[in-house]
Length: 326
Image (cartoon, rainbow, N blue to C red; front, side):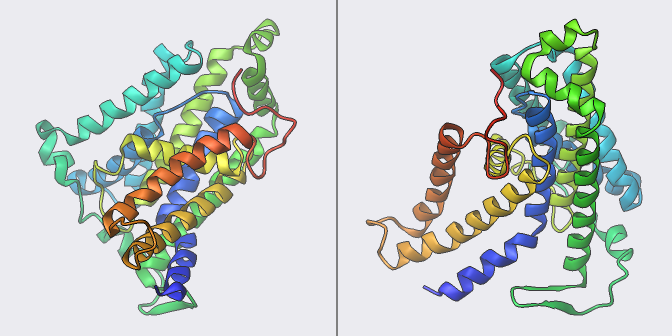
């Protein structure tokens, strides 16, 4: 077992596009759940719309990369409106059921062969990187130190992802400390009380759903920047992973989702490297390398249950503030 290489891969994952994409999606989910009390179990659908909107705009309509990103964000906002109009009057587990079904509908729509020329069906989409990479101002070469050595294209993806994440965190930080954000927290705790004060609860929820959906779509765009868009990525387990990152850092916080995503992906990378190595060394009671790789998903599920039971406020959350809808 090469422990040094395993630790190097783990450290490298801290700046991976997947980590940044998850952080953006978890930040959007924090707006939905942590601040508005909306149990959205379809965050993967918003990420898929962002990624596919970006790729399709470039491949099918020859948009520049920045316009493609805007199309992805706009598509997520429209999807939030369509989803929210009939569902936002539902509460708790009913809303969760509807959103998880909506995300699966989106995935199957991109997967169907009826739109193969546009979505690529099961093959997904690739080859849309030209415009983005052409805008890269970094000279060719490798830069960095230790485990964080990347070429100019890899750094360009990470820099744009980090800039997007910083802007998103600033926006959420500012609006959650505004009167709008305080009203949203009130709706989370007791929407009937807020409604009795003359506030339009439905409008606040809709605005939160759109904002969080746009942030999640931005995560989908960043996730798709370095490689390809595949419908196999945007499955239900992706939603559960984002929820794990959110609850780990703190649902009703701004920086908690970012911290949770970093810890989640570092642990995922560490386990995906160390468990197969342990299996190869015969330390896992007869499990082979493939079975050992699957074991990490079991550990993630157990961790999610333990977080909900013993630490629902997360690492950065306020223990006096309830983050789950009553």
